[in-house]
Length: 489
Length: 100
Image (cartoon, rainbow over all chains, first blue to last red):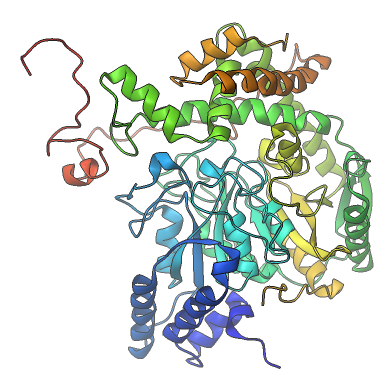
């Protein structure tokens, strides 16, 4: 049986569109039909841009008719996370405070994808302001895991992961502050890559924690991740933190050869905190790399245990500063009962932000406040340096670090929402990558006995996405692991 | 040091311009206390001689020529404002009296 278009890779779709085997319009209509068929159960999409998507696709087809060269993502259907600024539709961040916000400009990544002839189907769900690990914090809807509709898709890019997994789009964009691309990719069984901080412009990404946030793609194959990164990466004059470095052709890095590659296994990642089934899958995945000719070496991260504490101090501090701009004056919700300016601020923020966002603003304000700055914020920045040094030392012994993405597979709705600390621990293996500004990828490495995906995470030196993708691609080819369509089909 | 009181929560809420009901304050005393106690484990580490990592990458000041450039058209800048008069953002009156 041939694979339906909605489970074909972005590479296959763009090749077919470029070869005129199919039109971008046919691909777009097929995916819109697919969304109509399954999204009532998965609830990944928050906005569907039917007319605009068809117009975009028609423009791609017209370009083809004129004999002009089509872009590298010709006709590829894309879903965009709700926090990416787009002139089309709304940019809500899944928050009441921005529920009617319309951006006057497109994020740089959106402009780049459009220039590459991708087609935007609409926007996908997330935790409010990207604060969460389950997408249960969205004020719009509850996205389900396509492998088990009673379970969470992970977060905060849960909509991005569920939409790709359910065959609603071939590529989606997410953002990763402490694991928000890799953890949902793991829980939904797709590929998710967080590029090095600075690789991709953050212009038009509504900021959560500016020194940690990074945009990246979620895809069904490693090759698709490489293909999409080719378009996303590069210096942007609109973002002073984007790196002025050449962008390699990442698809060329996928040689299928990892002979001699040194893969580091952090001792601290394989403790009792890692669930038995996840451990078994990850160890089997590492064996695949060994069989491919990689040399497995042991590395140590003596400060790994401090990563979550450091992360929640830094990200809440930055969030409290970033979210101070939502004051009800220039954009967003304003409380109608406010009679004074002071009351306008207080009522707007108190009713506009949800409970997790308010909790993080309070924590951030606390750790930055007089008397606590040195004890928490400054201390965290110093330990962040120690965590970074652990990675620098590890990368003297290895080229890639491998380990689990998440300590546990997807969990049922509501099982962790009452305990913030327990939810924060879901990101235990992903957070250090953001603190150390490294690239990281999560790829599927099997299903648990209860039919939920497990993920292998790999990390590389800053700006060495090529090695990361080469190792991930090799695992994908050698392991023969194809999770196949999830049971929502 | 992680012992957080109701007064602490109220003080921080004031700084953050958030209004909390009584039940929420009680819950936050417990939750923030737990989270800050977890963060206190950083005190196990001697960091006296460690340079803080204040930025994700090498930061340099960003300068540009002081020449006027294109900016957001006024209409687009105002289009999301909850209240405006076509020229300015409007907020509740901050001065007493009849004059505008």
